[in-house]
Image 1 (cartoon, rainbow, N blue to C red):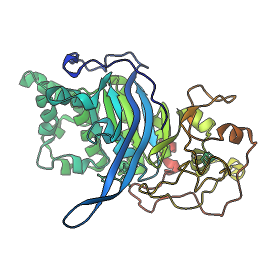
Image 2 (cartoon, rainbow, N blue to C red):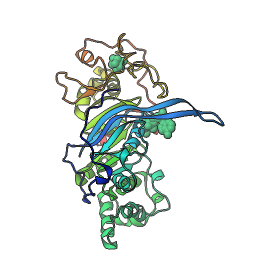
Image 3 (spheres, helix red, strand yellow):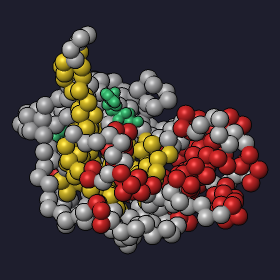
Image 4 (cartoon, protein in one colour):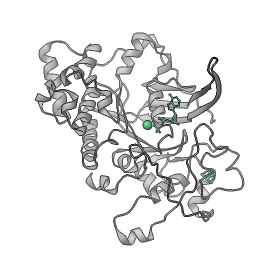
Length: 399
Ligand SMILES: Nc1ncnc2c1ncn2[C@@H]1O[C@H](COP(=O)(O)OP(=O)(O)O)[C@@H](O)[C@H]1O
Ligand code: SF4
Ligand SMILES: [Mg+2]
């Protein structure tokens, strides 16, 4: 694991400043670090035994992540199904306490919070889920769903102002005021996701973790919901962590993108730089599989084909996690030494671009060439709900 640099001392939990109570985000300025993830690991024990539970191994769902999400930005986290995206999202909310490492939110170590302070802090981080139907209680009207959190956090002063706020929320997410009296099943998938977003907004959060927010929706509706998230970010001054298995979705919405592979970040860069200069072989392979609408460019497009299945997170490969599928794998280091996520200095590449590959510079310069690989298409999961990393080109076209 990489060495964790020192960071300033957090205030003690009981000295956390009272909430500002405004619609706009955190105590810091835009660009300041809002979420600071340091060396986070989440390992799930695998148990066996009828009478006595024995731990026979671990699922290394998240296995050493360092990342920062800055105030006002959208961080897109992308990776194949099962690579640990949701677990990392839950660790940020402290719903899944890290096995190792720490998460600071707005300068406070979340793991150190308890009781009322934790409850207040949780309000600042809200989640939007893939399937709004399972996250919205079908027996509650939209009004009651939206009021629930507001009441719990003391955001309802009187009926008149609450009513005004509810109508404002609905307007913000593009639903009519009549929606208040209806129940989740009376809406389409896209409308339900709008209710899920309104519910997250209702408690005036600073960060929204949107876990596959459009994966369950039709392509045309996906674009509308993504546009809505973008509009709301500006209006509410929100910070987003958008988790997706679909590169097309994160590309459009993200300021920065982290590409995750088997519990760790393979690469992280601004959206533009990642697409212009993908440095990690995994990212290059993913991008090379995105079809280009222009037939001439499409014919000349570099296509990198990955061999082999995604290894199980309970038996991650030694050294570089990607070495079992990497067309650039070298005799030295790749199988034995785990690469650190490090900032590279390569001509044309933006500062802050980080990659976890021992040979990133040599690959970028062409000094190391990919080996010939068997013609197996880039891995695409058969799970259609949460599988293919490469979204339909039409999602991008619709945005
Ligand atoms: N509560 C849990 N107990 C055991 N294994 C889990 C648990 N939650 C997730 N996992 C496993 O951790 C890995 C990462 O899961 P997840 O974070 O859901 O991935 P993603 O969101 O990228 O699809 C998967 O192998 C999954 O089966
Ligand atoms: S460290 Fe080696 S195996 Fe890993 S991505 Fe780089 S070249 Fe491939
Ligand atoms: Mg997930």
